[in-house]
Image: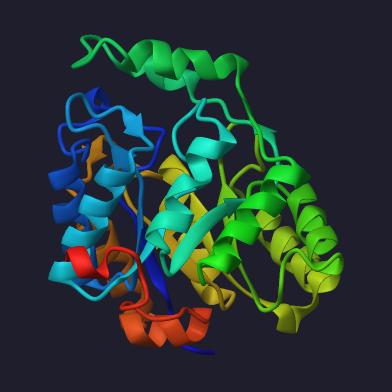
Length: 312
């Protein structure tokens, strides 16, 4: 088994500022937490942009560039830019940063789904910003669209930029989507699969389901055609990533996926979660991939071949 690649997903487009006083909802906070996660052992940091005024998910290229350049200047972690964006963004908004910023890695959602986080609104008594509760509640009637046409367009943009797609697999049917796109030449092996578990509307975060997803991918796509990672929402984060490590997979943690360190105890940063997963991995005698080792494992182009390097 090669060394373990740890990814830290810093802010995402799901959680809102009022859910935790430690949640990084402003660009400087995203940068600081990404650098802290890298120092704790994350080889990859996954970033979304947030509006500097109110923390709302943003597709602003300038904000993305400033965040990426600041992280790049302070650490050597590989930077993965989202194309999931924020809830309700158009495909054009979501893919725009790729051609301009040319990241090493970018998320690529592998199918459409209900993406429901409306229940989080019940946890907020007094919101910091007036957009938060309507934003969360709107997801009860939300379809997160990722059609074959848009996935193909996103993939073309990534390959043109030298960017490795990180295929986000929210349910087992998306493995068939990936196989179809591989068969018609849109996607190229070796692939990088991120199994995302525990989202309402996607596959439940259980041990049986992770084994099923991995075995299905091996059978359908071919075991030699991909490397994989696992992340899970909320309280399932640690159990599922622990299982993934024992199965030979890589892992993703961070406040995008889970705001807690344990029952009733909010995580102070993504770095705190990275420290925990690194400690467990070392107890299992697993080596932790440094950023350049992760670049080799994932087949990335290198930190200087990105669109923000000159701005760092």
